[in-house]
Image (cartoon, rainbow over all chains, first blue to last red; front, side, top):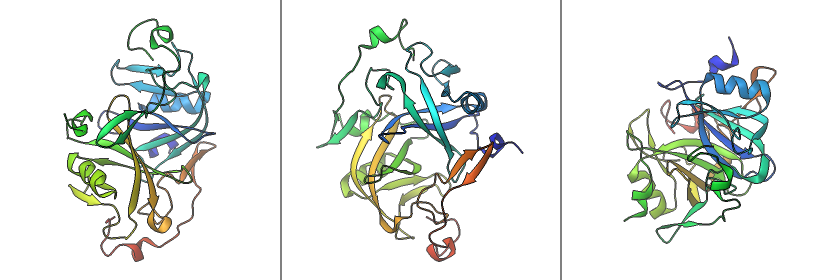
Length: 131
Length: 131
């Protein structure tokens, strides 16, 4: 049995994937992978995901250049979560131009933005919404 | 508008929740929250989740004693992921008796178990499958 068969793919054939900065251990983003994306990630050492909004395989950084070199892949007890240890090119994982997608913190019943925009998204992507 | 309305609940009224050890920064588990679980988590400072398998609100540690004190809540750019910084009582987050649910690492096309069982699950739970 392939290691890919031990992943518990959901009804859409996807698994949740968390990218964590291998050095700082900050959680940078959460996305999804299909079987092809996970297989390619393992084979190439570069993070690939399945874009649910664009419904296609997505090599992170294919447009922005912000690709992710993967040093470790982990699977959780239920088999439905993948954790990636990554090195983030450009130091920007989020499509808003911030280091991390987790840039809002709950303070006094409000989501406060804690991270600055490191690069204007308009200069990162040729088209809107790309990643 | 309540901060709870800024969360993008999925079609089942759930959001993905990641618990990260506030000190070590290790990712310990990934679960789901409904609106009530998230509101209770924020109000009490103790992690509450929605158990998809048991279809009920679940205060983590209610049976095992392994509760999670929450020091920070974050929301991602898409609004569909919550990140919790926690202190894990007993040092065990996983129902298998391990520190983390992410105890399998991909090595040479195999998921290798990297963590030891710290406590026999049979002594953690009165009934099977509980958390």
